[in-house]
Length: 184
Image 1 (cartoon, rainbow, N blue to C red):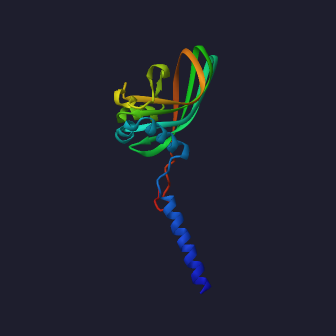
Image 2: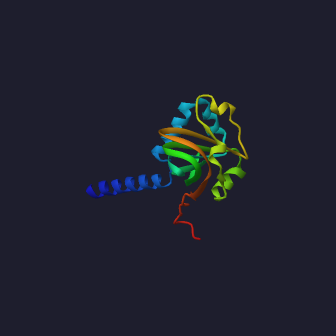
Image 3: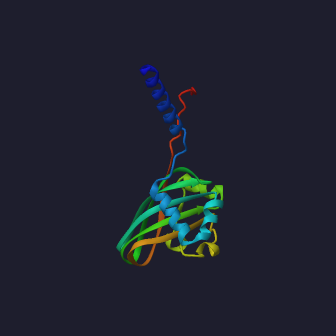
């Protein structure tokens, strides 16, 4: 009887592990919280998350400046709502600027060409010219520019800025799971 009980428990555990292994990867809790923050700030943004070909979410970007500024953050990238990888954001600016700030950033991709440009690490942008401050109703009037639409939400800090610079991104795809039953 003990042998059958042990075999049953091992079988159930193995089945549970196999089922977990086949589950699609899940976004990090901070990514989910940032998505909810954007939707709460502007409920009409739900349509962007639903209809965009893809989007990148950077839950926490830290920015500091004293003449020369720098910002950095890590996030996750989605295609049609499915997590496909991670990304890092780096920004360098020069000009009159002083302070420190934390913000969340959402980048929406209107079409596959824009998403592919991002995921092939060929995407950079001028942050000051392109980002829209997320607020109620902001998404209603926002328009894609070259297939991309960017929103930011200040989360803390104070920044005085009149600068020129841009953001650069590095995408890392999720590893493709290997099926041990399929021979290469």
